[in-house]
Image (cartoon, rainbow over all chains, first blue to last red; front, top):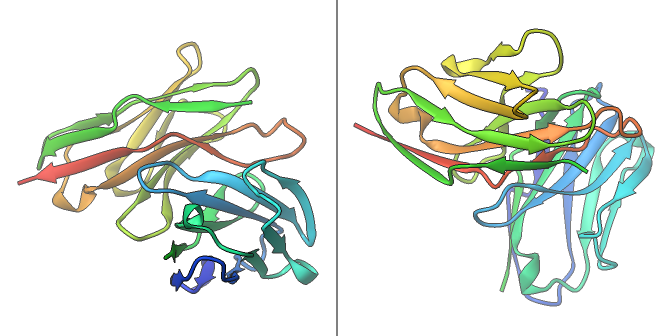
Length: 111
Length: 116
């Protein structure tokens, strides 16, 4: 399967802990996006990479969030000092420029 | 900046009946338009896309959509639904002319429930 892969699928963490999610894009795609989806809403853009360069960050991405894409391959999204409001589905997508393909998402629950 | 409005939050429909999901967008520039489907606790799967050319686009699973530039709409249709079409459907738009940025703006989604 050469689709977008995300790990883990589910994460339960205590408030105040740090969490890290991983995304492996489709290999020939140089663009990678992170989105957040809360219950009953559509996904919202968080950040975007072209190769290893992070080109745009949403205002939703507070200082507690950081994303990296070393060597332009996989990407990680880290949330420090998690809060209950961080509970959401975190979706990764990769793109061949025009069309984005999504992974299965990581469901984060902060308790 | 673009925005997307999905006019129906929930659409109940009987099996083998037709369904239409409405989507309107606002943008001052040319756009790409997409419909994605999401099954419970899953990611988004691309149903169909409009990039250019024919305004009637066909996608997977028997879905089609029509781009209407004058009405800034991109409504999704299926002539006969199945139980397996029960899911959340999202309309999305990107503005390719905006600094080569293809990030998507999504509507709030439409929940389709197909009943036997």
